[in-house]
Image 1 (cartoon, rainbow, N blue to C red):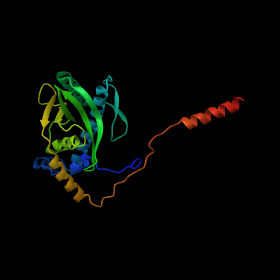
Image 2 (tube, rainbow, N blue to C red):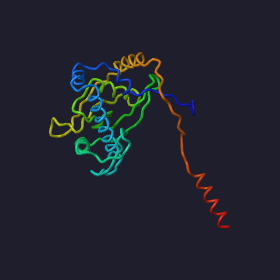
Image 3 (cartoon, one colour):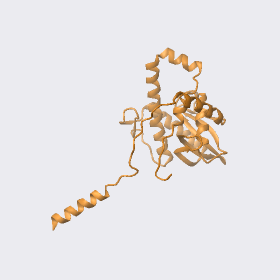
Image 4 (cartoon, one colour):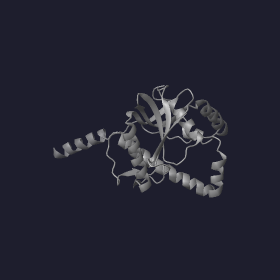
Length: 232
């Protein structure tokens, strides 16, 4: 209904309930839970800053090495680290190599049938084919990455689009990036959503109401009126 908004879970929250493989469980055990969480958080902050910088490039802005981007953990604006800048350079090399036609960047999508939402990193056309691409700044890809981008595809209006993971800052080749096509695994995402729904049943999600728009115009008009009265 117009003016009525509802909470929907994110794709990433749902996929946090996807079963973890033995390799990841061994890594967590070797690091300890707290240290593993700190490493994951730092990687997430890095990914967020790089995503914002890439979005700026796609929109046509020039990004300088000393430009600042918000760190989601601290809320402060920070310059890109050398490692983050390397990711940005790798994206620029990939972009020039494939010369994509941009269709959308950092677009929020919502599947109202299955009730979830997420953000697509990049939608483009390459050699006449539509692609939905997710950016990753890590050195590995995991099964839930394919489920994540599959969920995005089914919340967007490009049913024939191909799906891919673009790893940037990739250290296992000289290009610094790896482009991997993945198959649509939406049924497996829906199965994971069922697990998520069962495990989070009864969970109260904090929600806060925000105004839909802000304006200083009335206040400015009143201030001008007061100034006119004083002048008179």
